[in-house]
Length: 158
Image 1: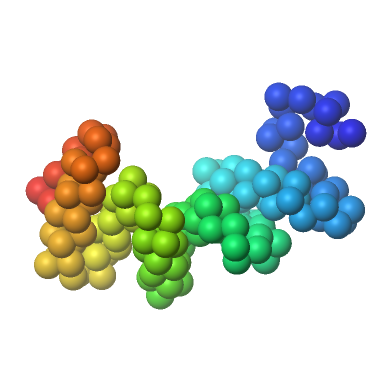
Image 2: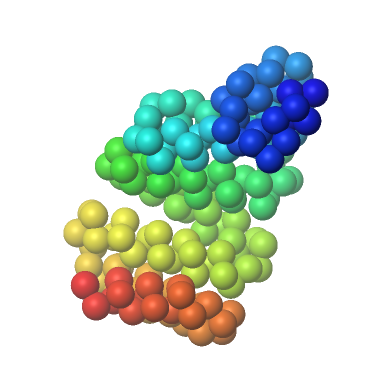
């Protein structure tokens, strides 16, 4: 009902909808709005709040729903990057790489390589940065990801 009332503006009240659907034991709807709330919180640098929403969304997401888990983990690793929590970020990047591989999705694999390159830079593993940048370029070329290819060259050139 709340969702219908707000229509296209539902994302603006994502926190309220997430809470409502979580309390109503409607996990599919709750996790969607928890993910949206997590992204909104990250964009306003409310990082603890973002982690809370994203962690709850991941708890509600079945392991079999690999695409949704990928989306949520990608968002969460961005928060860990902002917080410079490199260990947590590394763990999410490893899970993301495994998911992208299982999904056999070259664009997602390139996307993760483009996350791994700056991660390697942050931990002063420059040879790894180059490896991930080159990997992103390879994957982007084979999947016609021109923007990803350009980002790969940008990381490689740093």
